[in-house]
Length: 407
Image (tube, rainbow, N blue to C red; front, top):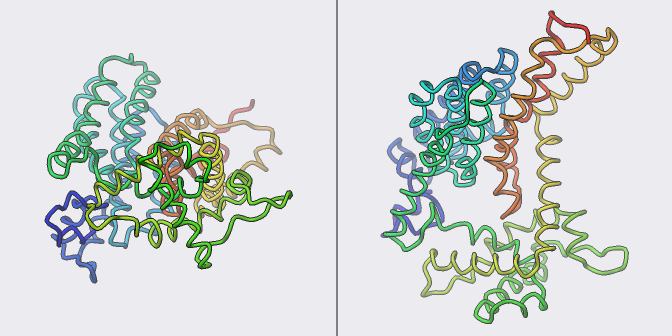
Protein backbone atom coordinates (compact mmCIF):
# COMPACT_ATOMS: atom_id res chain seq x y z
CA UNK A 1 0.00 0.00 0.00
CA UNK A 2 3.03 2.31 0.15
CA UNK A 3 4.51 1.20 -3.17
CA UNK A 4 2.58 3.86 -5.09
CA UNK A 5 4.54 6.62 -3.35
CA UNK A 6 7.61 5.71 -5.41
CA UNK A 7 5.68 5.64 -8.68
CA UNK A 8 4.80 8.35 -11.15
CA UNK A 9 1.42 6.66 -11.81
CA UNK A 10 -0.18 5.88 -8.43
CA UNK A 11 -3.40 4.83 -10.18
CA UNK A 12 -1.56 2.16 -12.15
CA UNK A 13 -0.77 -0.17 -9.26
CA UNK A 14 -2.75 -3.15 -8.00
CA UNK A 15 -3.89 -1.33 -4.84
CA UNK A 16 -5.93 1.81 -4.31
CA UNK A 17 -3.58 4.62 -3.23
CA UNK A 18 -6.17 6.18 -0.91
CA UNK A 19 -5.38 3.92 2.02
CA UNK A 20 -1.66 4.55 1.64
CA UNK A 21 -2.21 8.30 1.62
CA UNK A 22 -4.34 8.17 4.77
CA UNK A 23 -1.96 5.79 6.52
CA UNK A 24 1.05 7.98 5.64
CA UNK A 25 -0.74 11.05 6.98
CA UNK A 26 -1.17 9.16 10.28
CA UNK A 27 2.54 8.35 10.42
CA UNK A 28 2.56 4.83 8.98
CA UNK A 29 5.27 3.69 6.60
CA UNK A 30 6.64 0.44 5.20
CA UNK A 31 8.22 -0.59 8.52
CA UNK A 32 6.02 1.11 11.12
CA UNK A 33 2.32 1.54 11.93
CA UNK A 34 2.33 4.99 13.50
CA UNK A 35 -1.16 6.02 14.61
CA UNK A 36 -2.89 4.26 11.73
CA UNK A 37 -4.43 1.55 13.97
CA UNK A 38 -6.30 4.04 16.17
CA UNK A 39 -9.06 5.18 13.71
CA UNK A 40 -9.95 1.58 12.74
CA UNK A 41 -10.20 0.67 16.43
CA UNK A 42 -12.55 3.58 17.06
CA UNK A 43 -14.62 2.72 13.99
CA UNK A 44 -14.79 -0.91 15.11
CA UNK A 45 -16.43 0.22 18.36
CA UNK A 46 -18.70 2.85 16.82
CA UNK A 47 -20.01 0.79 13.88
CA UNK A 48 -21.98 -1.77 15.97
CA UNK A 49 -23.79 1.07 17.79
CA UNK A 50 -24.68 2.69 14.45
CA UNK A 51 -25.94 -0.69 13.26
CA UNK A 52 -27.96 -1.18 16.48
CA UNK A 53 -29.70 2.20 16.41
CA UNK A 54 -30.23 1.95 12.66
CA UNK A 55 -31.86 -1.45 13.09
CA UNK A 56 -34.10 -0.12 15.86
CA UNK A 57 -35.09 2.86 13.74
CA UNK A 58 -35.75 0.52 10.82
CA UNK A 59 -38.31 -1.49 12.77
CA UNK A 60 -36.20 -4.34 14.15
CA UNK A 61 -36.88 -5.06 17.82
CA UNK A 62 -34.35 -4.69 20.60
CA UNK A 63 -33.43 -8.39 20.62
CA UNK A 64 -32.77 -8.50 16.87
CA UNK A 65 -30.81 -5.25 16.92
CA UNK A 66 -28.79 -6.56 19.86
CA UNK A 67 -27.96 -9.73 17.92
CA UNK A 68 -26.74 -7.76 14.90
CA UNK A 69 -24.66 -5.34 16.95
CA UNK A 70 -23.13 -8.11 19.04
CA UNK A 71 -22.14 -10.08 15.94
CA UNK A 72 -20.53 -6.95 14.50
CA UNK A 73 -18.69 -6.09 17.70
CA UNK A 74 -17.36 -9.61 18.29
CA UNK A 75 -16.65 -10.42 14.64
CA UNK A 76 -13.58 -12.52 14.02
CA UNK A 77 -12.60 -10.32 11.09
CA UNK A 78 -12.61 -7.23 13.29
CA UNK A 79 -10.38 -8.75 15.95
CA UNK A 80 -7.90 -10.16 13.45
CA UNK A 81 -7.52 -7.05 11.27
CA UNK A 82 -8.18 -4.02 13.49
CA UNK A 83 -4.54 -3.72 14.58
CA UNK A 84 -2.97 -4.31 11.16
CA UNK A 85 -1.84 -1.82 8.53
CA UNK A 86 -4.41 -2.84 5.93
CA UNK A 87 -7.84 -1.49 4.90
CA UNK A 88 -9.95 -4.51 5.92
CA UNK A 89 -11.03 -3.20 9.32
CA UNK A 90 -11.98 0.39 8.35
CA UNK A 91 -13.67 -0.81 5.15
CA UNK A 92 -15.75 -3.29 7.12
CA UNK A 93 -16.72 -0.74 9.78
CA UNK A 94 -17.70 1.89 7.21
CA UNK A 95 -19.89 -0.60 5.35
CA UNK A 96 -21.53 -1.72 8.61
CA UNK A 97 -22.35 1.92 9.32
CA UNK A 98 -23.82 2.19 5.83
CA UNK A 99 -26.02 -0.83 6.57
CA UNK A 100 -27.20 0.77 9.82
CA UNK A 101 -27.96 4.05 8.06
CA UNK A 102 -29.85 2.14 5.35
CA UNK A 103 -32.09 0.46 7.91
CA UNK A 104 -32.75 3.83 9.57
CA UNK A 105 -33.52 5.43 6.21
CA UNK A 106 -36.24 2.84 5.56
CA UNK A 107 -38.34 4.24 8.43
CA UNK A 108 -39.80 7.15 6.44
CA UNK A 109 -39.35 9.40 3.43
CA UNK A 110 -37.90 12.09 5.70
CA UNK A 111 -35.32 9.66 7.07
CA UNK A 112 -34.34 8.72 3.52
CA UNK A 113 -33.78 12.35 2.54
CA UNK A 114 -31.53 12.87 5.56
CA UNK A 115 -29.53 9.66 5.20
CA UNK A 116 -29.27 8.89 1.47
CA UNK A 117 -26.07 10.87 0.97
CA UNK A 118 -24.36 9.56 4.16
CA UNK A 119 -25.20 6.02 3.06
CA UNK A 120 -23.53 6.59 -0.31
CA UNK A 121 -20.46 8.20 1.28
CA UNK A 122 -20.02 5.46 3.89
CA UNK A 123 -20.53 2.61 1.46
CA UNK A 124 -18.42 4.32 -1.20
CA UNK A 125 -15.52 4.75 1.21
CA UNK A 126 -15.91 1.10 2.23
CA UNK A 127 -15.75 -0.36 -1.28
CA UNK A 128 -13.03 2.03 -2.43
CA UNK A 129 -10.86 0.81 0.44
CA UNK A 130 -11.82 -2.82 -0.21
CA UNK A 131 -13.10 -3.33 -3.80
CA UNK A 132 -14.35 -6.83 -2.93
CA UNK A 133 -17.29 -5.01 -1.31
CA UNK A 134 -18.49 -3.64 -4.67
CA UNK A 135 -21.66 -5.81 -4.67
CA UNK A 136 -22.92 -3.51 -1.88
CA UNK A 137 -23.85 -1.06 -4.66
CA UNK A 138 -26.72 -3.38 -5.57
CA UNK A 139 -27.38 -5.00 -2.20
CA UNK A 140 -27.95 -1.83 -0.15
CA UNK A 141 -30.75 -0.42 -2.37
CA UNK A 142 -32.42 -3.85 -2.30
CA UNK A 143 -32.11 -3.94 1.49
CA UNK A 144 -33.62 -0.46 1.71
CA UNK A 145 -36.53 -1.43 -0.54
CA UNK A 146 -37.31 -4.55 1.48
CA UNK A 147 -37.31 -2.74 4.82
CA UNK A 148 -39.21 0.27 3.46
CA UNK A 149 -41.90 -2.14 2.28
CA UNK A 150 -41.78 -3.95 5.66
CA UNK A 151 -42.30 -0.63 7.43
CA UNK A 152 -45.42 0.12 5.45
CA UNK A 153 -43.93 2.31 2.77
CA UNK A 154 -44.07 1.89 -0.98
CA UNK A 155 -41.11 1.07 -3.18
CA UNK A 156 -40.79 4.27 -5.20
CA UNK A 157 -38.09 6.29 -6.97
CA UNK A 158 -36.05 6.32 -3.78
CA UNK A 159 -34.66 2.81 -4.39
CA UNK A 160 -33.19 3.53 -7.86
CA UNK A 161 -32.00 6.92 -6.61
CA UNK A 162 -30.07 5.20 -3.84
CA UNK A 163 -28.58 2.86 -6.43
CA UNK A 164 -27.33 5.85 -8.43
CA UNK A 165 -25.90 7.53 -5.35
CA UNK A 166 -24.08 4.36 -4.32
CA UNK A 167 -22.63 3.95 -7.79
CA UNK A 168 -21.41 7.55 -7.96
CA UNK A 169 -18.11 7.00 -6.02
CA UNK A 170 -17.30 4.06 -8.30
CA UNK A 171 -18.03 6.04 -11.44
CA UNK A 172 -16.07 9.07 -10.25
CA UNK A 173 -13.06 7.02 -9.17
CA UNK A 174 -13.11 4.97 -12.35
CA UNK A 175 -13.30 8.13 -14.47
CA UNK A 176 -10.20 9.48 -12.72
CA UNK A 177 -8.29 6.28 -13.41
CA UNK A 178 -9.55 6.15 -17.00
CA UNK A 179 -8.03 9.56 -17.62
CA UNK A 180 -4.83 8.78 -15.71
CA UNK A 181 -3.98 5.26 -16.89
CA UNK A 182 -6.65 4.35 -19.45
CA UNK A 183 -8.45 1.82 -17.27
CA UNK A 184 -12.06 2.15 -16.07
CA UNK A 185 -12.12 0.51 -12.65
CA UNK A 186 -11.21 1.17 -9.03
CA UNK A 187 -7.91 -0.73 -9.35
CA UNK A 188 -6.21 -2.98 -11.88
CA UNK A 189 -6.31 -6.17 -9.88
CA UNK A 190 -9.22 -8.39 -10.91
CA UNK A 191 -7.54 -10.06 -13.88
CA UNK A 192 -4.33 -10.71 -11.97
CA UNK A 193 -6.18 -12.11 -8.96
CA UNK A 194 -8.47 -14.22 -11.14
CA UNK A 195 -5.75 -15.71 -13.36
CA UNK A 196 -4.96 -18.76 -11.17
CA UNK A 197 -8.57 -19.89 -11.61
CA UNK A 198 -7.91 -20.03 -15.34
CA UNK A 199 -4.50 -21.64 -14.77
CA UNK A 200 -6.03 -24.54 -12.81
CA UNK A 201 -8.85 -24.95 -15.36
CA UNK A 202 -6.79 -24.85 -18.56
CA UNK A 203 -5.91 -27.90 -20.64
CA UNK A 204 -4.43 -28.19 -24.12
CA UNK A 205 -7.93 -28.75 -25.54
CA UNK A 206 -9.29 -25.60 -23.88
CA UNK A 207 -6.31 -23.54 -25.07
CA UNK A 208 -7.03 -24.68 -28.63
CA UNK A 209 -10.55 -23.26 -28.34
CA UNK A 210 -9.33 -19.81 -27.30
CA UNK A 211 -8.71 -17.00 -29.81
CA UNK A 212 -5.23 -17.34 -31.28
CA UNK A 213 -3.93 -14.07 -29.79
CA UNK A 214 -4.75 -15.37 -26.26
CA UNK A 215 -3.08 -18.75 -26.58
CA UNK A 216 0.48 -17.65 -25.67
CA UNK A 217 -0.78 -16.10 -22.42
CA UNK A 218 -2.89 -19.18 -21.66
CA UNK A 219 0.14 -21.38 -22.30
CA UNK A 220 2.10 -19.18 -19.91
CA UNK A 221 -0.52 -19.73 -17.20
CA UNK A 222 -0.27 -23.49 -17.66
CA UNK A 223 3.53 -23.30 -17.58
CA UNK A 224 3.39 -21.34 -14.29
CA UNK A 225 1.08 -23.97 -12.80
CA UNK A 226 3.03 -26.98 -14.01
CA UNK A 227 6.36 -25.40 -13.11
CA UNK A 228 5.24 -24.93 -9.52
CA UNK A 229 4.15 -28.59 -9.40
CA UNK A 230 7.45 -29.77 -10.83
CA UNK A 231 9.39 -27.75 -8.27
CA UNK A 232 7.28 -29.17 -5.44
CA UNK A 233 6.00 -25.71 -4.50
CA UNK A 234 2.38 -26.84 -4.82
CA UNK A 235 0.69 -30.27 -4.55
CA UNK A 236 -0.33 -32.11 -7.67
CA UNK A 237 -3.94 -32.90 -8.45
CA UNK A 238 -4.70 -36.14 -6.57
CA UNK A 239 -5.65 -39.34 -8.37
CA UNK A 240 -9.33 -40.25 -8.43
CA UNK A 241 -10.79 -43.76 -8.19
CA UNK A 242 -10.07 -44.32 -11.87
CA UNK A 243 -6.43 -43.37 -11.48
CA UNK A 244 -6.84 -40.07 -13.33
CA UNK A 245 -5.99 -36.57 -12.16
CA UNK A 246 -9.38 -34.99 -12.81
CA UNK A 247 -9.98 -31.29 -12.20
CA UNK A 248 -13.70 -31.59 -11.51
CA UNK A 249 -13.48 -34.19 -8.73
CA UNK A 250 -10.61 -32.29 -7.11
CA UNK A 251 -12.38 -28.92 -7.26
CA UNK A 252 -15.48 -30.39 -5.64
CA UNK A 253 -13.97 -32.79 -3.13
CA UNK A 254 -10.49 -31.45 -2.44
CA UNK A 255 -10.75 -27.73 -3.12
CA UNK A 256 -8.11 -26.90 -0.50
CA UNK A 257 -5.49 -28.37 -2.87
CA UNK A 258 -6.13 -25.37 -5.10
CA UNK A 259 -6.66 -22.97 -2.22
CA UNK A 260 -3.24 -23.76 -0.75
CA UNK A 261 -1.62 -23.47 -4.19
CA UNK A 262 -3.32 -20.25 -5.27
CA UNK A 263 -0.93 -17.59 -3.96
CA UNK A 264 2.15 -19.58 -4.94
CA UNK A 265 1.03 -19.93 -8.53
CA UNK A 266 -0.03 -16.28 -8.63
CA UNK A 267 2.94 -14.51 -7.07
CA UNK A 268 5.80 -16.87 -7.93
CA UNK A 269 4.62 -17.99 -11.35
CA UNK A 270 2.04 -15.84 -13.09
CA UNK A 271 3.57 -12.57 -11.86
CA UNK A 272 6.68 -13.38 -13.91
CA UNK A 273 4.63 -13.34 -17.13
CA UNK A 274 4.53 -9.53 -17.15
CA UNK A 275 6.56 -8.29 -20.10
CA UNK A 276 9.35 -5.78 -19.69
CA UNK A 277 7.55 -3.22 -21.87
CA UNK A 278 4.12 -3.86 -20.28
CA UNK A 279 2.76 -1.85 -17.36
CA UNK A 280 0.63 -3.51 -14.72
CA UNK A 281 -2.62 -2.08 -16.09
CA UNK A 282 -2.02 -3.72 -19.47
CA UNK A 283 -0.82 -6.93 -17.79
CA UNK A 284 -3.95 -7.10 -15.66
CA UNK A 285 -6.13 -6.45 -18.70
CA UNK A 286 -4.42 -9.25 -20.63
CA UNK A 287 -4.90 -11.71 -17.79
CA UNK A 288 -8.55 -10.69 -17.36
CA UNK A 289 -9.20 -11.25 -21.06
CA UNK A 290 -7.72 -14.75 -20.97
CA UNK A 291 -9.44 -15.66 -17.69
CA UNK A 292 -12.88 -14.65 -18.97
CA UNK A 293 -12.28 -16.44 -22.27
CA UNK A 294 -11.28 -19.59 -20.37
CA UNK A 295 -14.51 -19.51 -18.36
CA UNK A 296 -16.53 -19.04 -21.54
CA UNK A 297 -14.71 -21.95 -23.20
CA UNK A 298 -15.14 -24.28 -20.20
CA UNK A 299 -18.22 -23.11 -18.27
CA UNK A 300 -18.74 -26.47 -16.54
CA UNK A 301 -15.28 -26.30 -15.01
CA UNK A 302 -15.97 -22.80 -13.72
CA UNK A 303 -19.31 -23.89 -12.21
CA UNK A 304 -17.48 -26.73 -10.46
CA UNK A 305 -14.83 -24.28 -9.23
CA UNK A 306 -17.56 -22.04 -7.77
CA UNK A 307 -19.16 -25.08 -6.13
CA UNK A 308 -15.90 -26.05 -4.46
CA UNK A 309 -15.24 -22.46 -3.43
CA UNK A 310 -18.72 -22.23 -1.88
CA UNK A 311 -18.14 -25.43 0.08
CA UNK A 312 -14.90 -24.02 1.47
CA UNK A 313 -16.56 -20.66 2.13
CA UNK A 314 -19.48 -22.14 4.07
CA UNK A 315 -17.25 -24.47 6.04
CA UNK A 316 -14.88 -21.70 7.12
CA UNK A 317 -17.77 -19.32 7.81
CA UNK A 318 -19.25 -21.77 10.33
CA UNK A 319 -16.61 -24.19 11.59
CA UNK A 320 -13.67 -21.75 11.73
CA UNK A 321 -15.73 -18.77 12.86
CA UNK A 322 -15.45 -18.59 16.66
CA UNK A 323 -18.43 -16.22 17.22
CA UNK A 324 -20.59 -18.43 14.99
CA UNK A 325 -19.66 -21.55 16.92
CA UNK A 326 -20.37 -19.80 20.22
CA UNK A 327 -23.76 -18.62 18.97
CA UNK A 328 -24.63 -22.14 17.80
CA UNK A 329 -23.67 -23.60 21.18
CA UNK A 330 -25.86 -21.03 22.92
CA UNK A 331 -28.68 -21.87 20.51
CA UNK A 332 -28.48 -25.58 21.39
CA UNK A 333 -28.40 -24.82 25.10
CA UNK A 334 -31.39 -22.46 24.84
CA UNK A 335 -33.39 -24.86 22.68
CA UNK A 336 -33.42 -27.77 25.15
CA UNK A 337 -35.42 -26.12 27.98
CA UNK A 338 -37.72 -24.36 25.51
CA UNK A 339 -38.52 -27.70 23.89
CA UNK A 340 -39.03 -29.42 27.26
CA UNK A 341 -41.55 -26.79 28.34
CA UNK A 342 -43.26 -26.84 24.91
CA UNK A 343 -43.08 -23.11 24.59
CA UNK A 344 -42.46 -21.10 21.46
CA UNK A 345 -40.66 -17.91 20.67
CA UNK A 346 -41.06 -14.71 22.58
CA UNK A 347 -42.34 -11.63 20.74
CA UNK A 348 -38.71 -10.92 19.78
CA UNK A 349 -38.83 -14.00 17.57
CA UNK A 350 -40.56 -12.00 14.87
CA UNK A 351 -37.27 -10.20 14.27
CA UNK A 352 -35.44 -13.37 13.25
CA UNK A 353 -36.45 -13.02 9.60
CA UNK A 354 -35.36 -9.37 9.52
CA UNK A 355 -32.03 -10.19 11.15
CA UNK A 356 -31.51 -12.99 8.63
CA UNK A 357 -32.15 -10.63 5.71
CA UNK A 358 -29.59 -8.15 7.02
CA UNK A 359 -26.98 -10.86 7.69
CA UNK A 360 -27.45 -12.45 4.28
CA UNK A 361 -27.35 -9.03 2.63
CA UNK A 362 -24.00 -8.43 4.30
CA UNK A 363 -22.83 -11.88 3.17
CA UNK A 364 -23.70 -11.01 -0.43
CA UNK A 365 -21.99 -7.62 -0.24
CA UNK A 366 -18.69 -8.94 1.08
CA UNK A 367 -18.57 -12.53 -0.15
CA UNK A 368 -19.88 -12.86 -3.71
CA UNK A 369 -16.75 -11.75 -5.56
CA UNK A 370 -14.45 -13.91 -3.46
CA UNK A 371 -16.36 -17.02 -4.53
CA UNK A 372 -16.88 -16.12 -8.19
CA UNK A 373 -13.46 -14.82 -9.24
CA UNK A 374 -10.87 -16.06 -6.75
CA UNK A 375 -10.31 -18.44 -3.87
CA UNK A 376 -12.15 -17.59 -0.62
CA UNK A 377 -9.22 -16.87 1.67
CA UNK A 378 -9.57 -16.70 5.43
CA UNK A 379 -9.74 -12.91 5.80
CA UNK A 380 -12.32 -12.62 3.03
CA UNK A 381 -14.52 -15.30 4.59
CA UNK A 382 -14.18 -13.81 8.08
CA UNK A 383 -15.38 -10.43 6.80
CA UNK A 384 -18.27 -11.82 4.75
CA UNK A 385 -19.43 -14.03 7.66
CA UNK A 386 -19.24 -11.25 10.26
CA UNK A 387 -23.03 -10.95 10.74
CA UNK A 388 -23.95 -14.62 10.35
CA UNK A 389 -23.76 -15.28 14.12
CA UNK A 390 -26.60 -12.78 14.53
CA UNK A 391 -29.06 -15.35 13.13
CA UNK A 392 -28.62 -18.06 15.80
CA UNK A 393 -28.09 -15.34 18.40
CA UNK A 394 -31.49 -13.84 17.54
CA UNK A 395 -33.01 -17.27 18.13
CA UNK A 396 -31.23 -17.50 21.48
CA UNK A 397 -32.51 -14.12 22.65
CA UNK A 398 -36.06 -15.03 21.61
CA UNK A 399 -35.94 -18.45 23.26
CA UNK A 400 -34.52 -17.21 26.54
CA UNK A 401 -36.86 -14.26 26.94
CA UNK A 402 -38.97 -14.29 30.11
CA UNK A 403 -42.13 -13.40 28.20
CA UNK A 404 -42.66 -16.61 26.26
CA UNK A 405 -45.95 -17.34 24.58
CA UNK A 406 -47.30 -20.88 24.03
CA UNK A 407 -47.61 -22.16 20.48
